[in-house]
Image 1 (tube, rainbow, N blue to C red):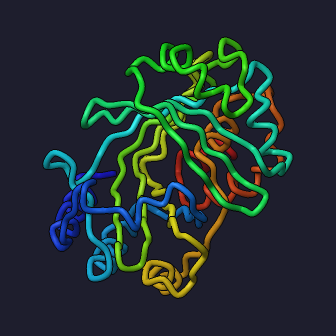
Image 2 (tube, rainbow, N blue to C red):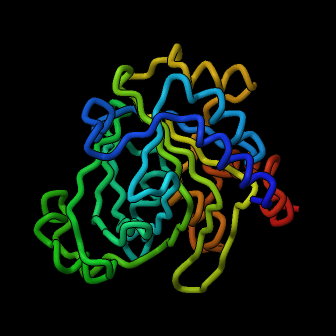
Length: 264
């Protein structure tokens, strides 16, 4: 984001009441339904200004934005990616998430059920992603992963997150900007400095939610987008099928100059 946009975002964040992690329980939502949206970064100040009345802003250690570093693990032949690509439900993703602002990390498993629900389970872990996989073999075994040594880092994603919550509504909104996707084996990198990836997390889909209505008023509709699968599609040439995600990438190209350049 350019400096003018960064300043406008900082100004918009000042309009929120703030909360800490200890202030939320109803909106934690480890078992939820996700609605995803991909929008131009220039809309972020308007979205924040429009949301400040109904949501509060997470502040951790004096920071209103947090930097995340995710390492996604998969088998050598991308079996978790392929499950998603083939539309299989009851699928999992394995990732190591490093909260760079607080220097803490968790090993996480995201399970997508055949009911369309996302269930996240996690354990606090070493900052070293590969070490975390080996140290928590029992945790992985609970999800049928009996040989963690076969899991390899397949995608690295770094981004800035703004997190909004409403305890009354039981909702959480994450707004991720400046995402950078890297293929660990080749170093191929794609940066999305002009895009914000939004997730609205709810117990059940409620399109009358204030944030849903705010997005609709700006002409924004939900679309599927997985950071892992999107990152693999963008950075892993010819190693996996990407046709199922091509429509998502084409939509992304309409708002991102870096993707538009790649697809021309």
